Image (cartoon, rainbow, N blue to C red; front, top):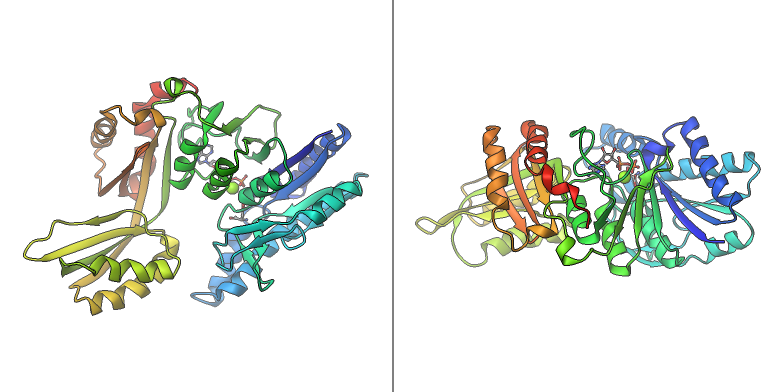
Length: 408
Ligand code: ADP
Ligand code: ASP
Ligand code: MG
């Protein structure tokens, strides 16, 4: 008998028939004699709909109330799944994040898990129940509900797999695994059999929405293998695990893209110490992640600073940067929300020259203008117009196709 930790995403529990499908899969696991712990996301687009509803009433909704509101989506799906299982003759119980012992810090909408106390889960398993847990949520030290960031049910699942000492965390979704690019954009993308944590973390951080980046990070820190597979078939999926041997590493494992990008430009500020600090410290205090930062070479002691944030954060960021811009004497602060980013990722790129040139060549051949460029050791990212993102992903997939075949 094994302890199995599974997670089913929103697309896999989007309606009654799909919930019944998930219940049958859990029933099969139980009939094979396993202890089943199952994390669920909210049904379909519920979280987006709840966010839109709040914004119909309030421009910038209260963060505490928003987290309670969003946590209800996962409570709905967990209860429906538990009652379906019971109706099928299986003992099952649903638990909220609080009941499942998920403790977090108090950063609403981006809370981080500080501890997992799974005693109630263990007790319910001992009573013979399948335990169905509402993902994406926890409680802070004040017992206030928090949420773990978009896609956060993945993080709940990996955290539980670690604390319950499962062998692997199984993530079931609407695709067969992790592909060389988003299969919705590149129909001939190839499924990867395995991928290292490091590469998966870069892909996920730069837009490959199939896994939440923080879930991959947790898996990496605790060495928990993560299997991503389809909720509808019995395919083997993709195993996210420790990197293969150096020599077998992929040159390029995948292409990621993200259209949730906004650029903020602070034009005409003094080229002197303290300016970057004055801009970025208040953004960090407000919990806004800044991605690419570019400062132009100063002319006559005047320079421009450009940086990117998510579109979701742009209003909040502007409300902070505009007054700071005034106080540091900037000529003006402008923003552009019509951007996206496209990245190539692969551990084999490090110490191998020529990848950036090949990437720029493929984009130039499609007449795609690059606005900003950032790199890490295993990633090159170009920020381009959002309207050309899909063209860019397809062009890059074609340009690097030969690289995807070797598995690490
Ligand atoms: P879930 O509801 O199961 O959490 P998500 O929508 O969060 O599912 O993630 C699955 C989606 O991720 C897929 O439908 C696919 O369009 C998208 N995706 C983006 N990049 C990739 C990739 N490299 N491989 C697989 N899927 C990807
Ligand atoms: N329901 C949440 C979201 O849509 C969490 C998740 O799906 O993992 O982001
Ligand atoms: Mg997801």
